[in-house]
Image 1 (cartoon, rainbow, N blue to C red):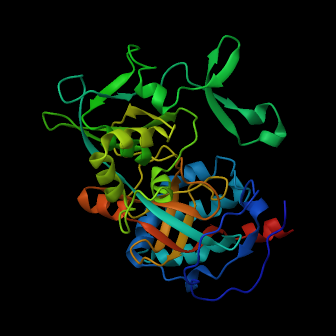
Image 2: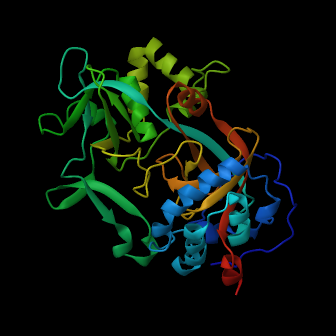
Amino acid sequence: MPDPVIRPMPARPLPAVPATEIQGAANARAAGVVAGPPVSSLRIDAARARAALTAFRLSCPTLVRRTDASGLTTQDEWKPACDAAQRFTGSDAATFFATWFETAQIGTGAALATGYFEPEIAASLHKRAGYDVPIYRRPPDLIEADLGQFSDSLRGKKVRGRVEGSALVPYYDRGQIEDGALAGRGLELAWAADPVELFFLQIQGSGRLRLPDGTIVRIGYDSQNGRDYTGIGALMRERGLLQPGQASMQGIMAWLRANPAEGDALMRENKSWVFFRTLTGAGPLGALGLPVTGRVSAAADPAFVPLGAPVFLSLDRTDAAGLWVAQDTGGAIKGANRFDTFWGAGPEARATAGGMSARGTAFLLLPKGSLARMGR
C-alpha cells in the first residue's frame, strides 16, 4: 500500500469543492492518505465536541477489537485515546480531540454529505384493511458468503444469495418480493399502510412503526437481499421527471404519489430490499450495534473510514458542518469522503435530512502516531 503523503495544509478548513470518486481504490490506504491541519485549528463547536466524545466512548470497544478495513489504523493505536476518553472529566471536549488526534484526508478530501433520519410510518402488527404492505424479517434461506475466505484478492467482499439445487444464486429482488416471493412463509414482521413510506424507511435503514392504537414499535436493519442499491432520485433527474427544486426526498415522494403506476415501476428499479427486526431499548442502532445519535452519528464506508472514528466535515451547509462520529453504514454510502449524517426523529429531522446535500472537505481524526506508522 502507498505511504501517506505528508504536506503542509492550511490552518482553516478548505472551501467546498465538488466530491470526486477515487477510481479503483479498494480502501483508504490505496486511495492515498494526506496529513491534514492540526485538530486545534478546526472550528469545533463545544457542544458538538461533548456529544461527539460521548459517542466516541461508546465506539471504543469496537475500535480496540475490530480490524480496520480502511487500513488506516490498528487496534493498539486506538487504546490510548480510548483510555483517555474514559478518564476525561473536563468540559472542554475539543481539547480532548486536539490532544489525542491528528487529521488526515483521503485523496483530495472532497466530500459529499447527505442526511438520514428515523422515519415513523403507520403500520399494524396484523394484516387488516388499510395495512397490506408486508414488512419482512430476515428470511432463513438468505445466505451471506465472505469471498475473502476463497481468495485473498477478494478480502472484504461479501455476497448474499440463496441456495438453489447445488448453486448459490442471487436472492429475490424488490419486484419478485413485491410479487409474493416471500409470501406465506410467516416472515411478516408487520404490515405498512403506505408502500412509498416503507420504501423510504428501507433507505433510512431503521424507523418507528406507529400502530393503530398509538403504540410505537421501533424496527432496525437486520439484513439486505444482496442486490445493488439504485437511487431513484438520480434516475428521475436523468429522465427529466423532477422540476428544479424537487430533488429532495419530499419532492420525490410527492411525484411517486402523483404518479402511482409509474412510481411503482420506478421503485422496482431499485432492486435492493431491506429486512428488519424489532428493537428494544435505546435506538435506532447503527452498524456497530450501538444507538446512533442525531446531529452526532454519521454513516460512512468502512473501507475508507474506521467505523467509530471521529470525522470533521468542513461543508457549505453550516448545519451539517462540524464534528461527527462514523457509527453507521449505508447501501448508498460507498467510496471515499462520502457521508450520510443522522438527524434523529421527528418533522424537523425529516425536513433537514430529506433536503441535505452538502459539499466540502472531510478530515478524518486518527489517533496520533497513525500517520507516522503508515509512513515508516
